[in-house]
Length: 237
Figure 1 (spheres, helix red, strand yellow):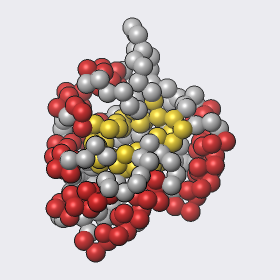
Figure 2 (cartoon, rainbow, N blue to C red):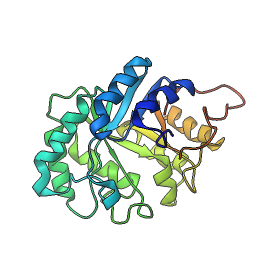
Figure 3 (tube, rainbow, N blue to C red):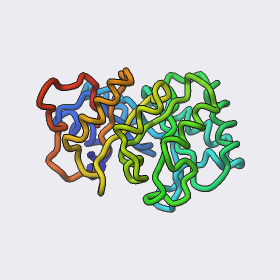
Figure 4 (tube, rainbow, N blue to C red):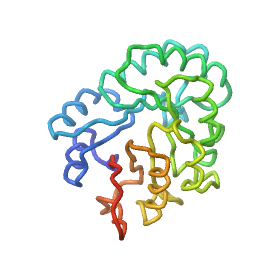
């Protein structure tokens, strides 16, 4: 939501928009500055991505690269030092699923404060991503078989793959650790469809956070209020 701003200004922008919880991609050399600003403005860091390589060059993680086993574990440990509740580990483009399972099993044994979450990315935005659907990511999480590794269900990526997130998310029950939401097409701000999705989360007894991932530059501050009673799930910018 605030990626058009310098890293140092994003926590204050989130606080002014009414949020108490925030998340971030890996903030590189500004990591400690981000942590300090989050504390200054009395926010809580819910999730941070582990370093996923050069995004502009097409990298979306490297957990599937056998030669970078140590880099994966180091990036997870670095993210944990920022004290988030969750660490998002992008698994990479291409093959290497068996190696991802192995490295995540090892990561689950690290003395981390955070829970690791695994996200699926659609093949339109990220051609060749190893886990293109929620089902693919859920199957990998189930194979890792650790309470320290959960599914990050992204409603936007699911919708781009032709799924109905409000129905589809019900298939994954207790595997879901964290959730992302934006409207399709174009990563637009939430509409009333958000509440249909939230109602599905409540049916699952999901008590976590909904991270809003729409593009910056809009006047949006909070999702449209549901006409009846507003759900109690916390929002995160």
